Amino acid sequence: MALYFGDLLPFSSLLLEGLWTALYITLVAMVAGSALGVFLYLGKVGPGKAVSIFCSCYIEAIRNTPLLVQLYLIYFALPALGINLEPIWAAVIGLTLNNAAYTAEIYRAGFESVPHGLREAGKALGMKNAQIVRYIVLLPATRNVFPALTNQLILLFLASSIGSIISLPELTNAIMSVSNTTYRTIEVLAVGGLLYLGVSALLSLASKRAETTLFRWAVGARV
Amino acid sequence: MTVIFVENLNKKFGPNHVLKGVDCHIREREVVCVIGPSGSGKSTFLRCMNGLESITSGSIVINKHRLDDSKTNINLVRQEAGMVFQHFNLFPHLKVIDNVMLAPLKVAKVNKDEARAKAEMLLAKVGLAEKMEAFPGSLSGGQMQRVAIARALAMDPKIMLFDEPTSALDPEIVGEVLTVMKDLANEGMTMVVVTHEMGFAREVADRVLFMDQGLIVEEGSPDEIFSSPRNARTQGFLSKVL
Image (tube, rainbow over all chains, first blue to last red; front, side, top):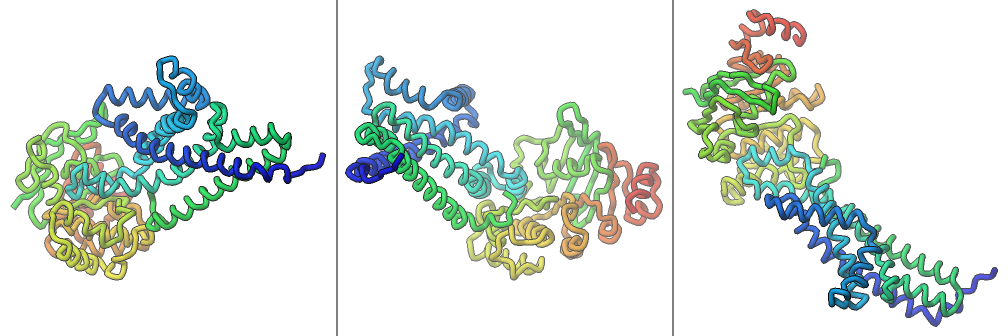
């Protein structure tokens, strides 16, 4: 079987637009989801009992059901309640709600992994709790959270391919339609796969760079 | 003048009765070393003195602040009683100088120039003037502990509490930390030191407390404790560590 990539050329802008859509919904869901995750985390560890239970239930429900089912619910079940969403908004909302639950757990793990001794040192100096969090715990916690968050960004980018099943023209959807038009299935899957791989590798590389420049102090430190 | 009053101090962790009625008075400028086997309650006793552990019953008065009174502002007590930990607990994201300046800036609210001048002076005093701009991660254990001492001193404490300050250090660098502590003792700082360094206790302490199973079993001058201990448990402990 001969591979022939030439047939794909007329569709390159379709594939690139798909890639752009995938990146767009990923970034929006990352920003919105990680912000929402802060509130989920604070709600979960905060003093309000009802709020804490609600946040825990939400986090567990999201993390223990398939993203695909969550997206189906938003796109196909919400219209029964009179809420109709464009595919792109259904995807953005689905990925955001999903991402929020995961980032909330990342924050929890990051804050818990800051050695307890740092808080005690702050206390022993007469600092108030809010000051201890602000000046002592926040940065080491951010450092602990950073690799998991960038990993989550890549996972989210790959998960955005699920948008294809609600006919959102993102990269996977574009791959399928080019395949259906040209019958060059292997070729277009190879090109599409390489696009995912390339972007993921770039994100990974950029986050490693960012980590070493942002957290220079962490070299040799016990955090 | 007595600055620390501990009376009938009891501390329980759940069913675990760690301190079983500790009595102890410590005078201004006194250096008291607390020795004893692991699990005897030495560290818990020390941590009760600045409220890092809550008191189950009994009373502690530090510089006229009653720790068993819920109206006492514990943060004021902590500003007057500095603490040095076994594992240093330096803030890893702050440079050495900023570790020392943090509490003066945020708690004592002194201005930046003043805090910096003070921090530079203290770091010079502990022999680390050239490490001011370094991050803690690049320091040796002995250097970290000396920074931790400078950090505690930056709040001008009247009392210093040391919780096994040299236990996490390699034997050859224990000396540099003990030297700093000795200087501090000679300057008249009131010090309570939980330690396994019997040489330090013997040389620097005014008084040595031997703790076992949640009680002060025996106390006296270093000479009395190390040369002629009266209690059988003290004798047993010292025969193993000396």
